[in-house]
Length: 282
Image 1 (cartoon, rainbow, N blue to C red):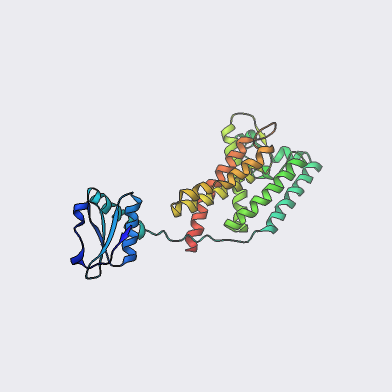
Image 2: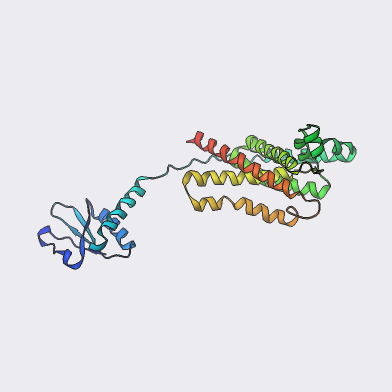
């Protein structure tokens, strides 16, 4: 880029060299800014100054209209500045995570002492669809097949629950986790009907927590119109897939469909909730 500060009377006729004025600006900084637009188009550029203090940007005559249109688009981009999104950050809710673990341990001891508890409160197509016992979709979240099953869901659920609590608030976040697990269990049962099905475990809610984090990230990406941030919102999902790939995605006794329905429920709950929180914080 060349820059000359000379009077208008001394400005040579650049039209003979193929350069014509394509923009007039009030300051050298603004002229140089738009000259960079021309250079970004891989075209020659020249800046001159008029007597009244205006600055002319010259560009290739053959591309004059294209350059002016590019200037217009550039100005429109500068005018549109998305308002910063206020993302509320809440406490971690560690106390609720510990309460979660305590409830799971208590329910597991009741299972051991009273085997009929599992029969009465497990999620099943017969109980939910045929008998209308929808509470099973909730109570099944607190029942587990064995101690490793319990410990895995307690550990991962606590970690992801703390992340969700940071994004949505402790009480609201854990409420959404349980709700996503409940909805996920219902969807799982109705998708499997009329197959005979029995299921238990908190992993539906754990995957619901992952879905809530994905939904929150997607809401931020949507509000800021950022494709890069949209991709970043799937980080919790990838982390969950890596963790549960060891023992939570497939294999004997693993309810993959319940994990999927829990995650989908979390996404559909997380997106609008995050939107309302951000809107109220503006």
